[in-house]
Amino acid sequence: MAEGLRERKKRQTRRRIAEVAVRLFVERGFDDVTMAEVAQAAEVSVNTVYNYFQAKEDLVLPPEEASPRRLADIVGERPPGQSAAVAVLERLRREVRGRERAVGLSAGFGRVLEMMRAAPTLTARLEDLGRQMTDALAVALAAETGADAGDPLPRVVAWHIGCLHSLVYAEIGRRTTAGESPDAIAAAVLELLDVAESLLGERVRTYAVREGRPCSE
Image 1: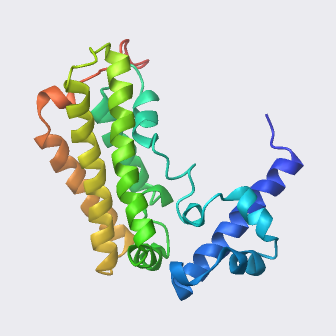
Image 2: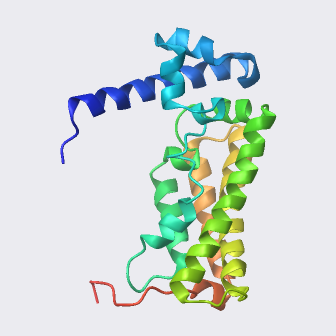
């Protein structure tokens, strides 16, 4: 269904507010900019800002992009014949190759990362987000495999996948802070993913293979 004019305007307003906010946060620091100042710079009312973003942190980490269900959704969308771990590995490779915002390889991310690391509430949210992603993945894996409530296997597999996911972001952050180019970072992270996959235990790498055969077979 085509996007209506009203929806398009709302999306554009939301994006403009977020872009203005991040620019101000980078220039002055997250803690030194108020929601009222964001509204003034974006030429909207404070109520409009809160209509789109319930909390100040949402301006930097919008729930639709920084979702606690990111890993569970990736695994839930995998094709037949693919395991949970491989699904996440393949998504990360695709995002890295595409220099996507989702993995912090978009232009100008270095300054945004510095701003985020200087804001305790943002770093705390990122840490909590990682835990929520792993927890949601564990629940999804248990439901899909029919594991008993006390079975630790879904949680252990989710932990392995969550740690790998966090490792990729940590590596991108470290190299970004060091001033490496997105192309150099992408090449290094793709190599890291290959090494990580080669070291994954067989039980983790083949856990929760979706039933059915890929269409190409």
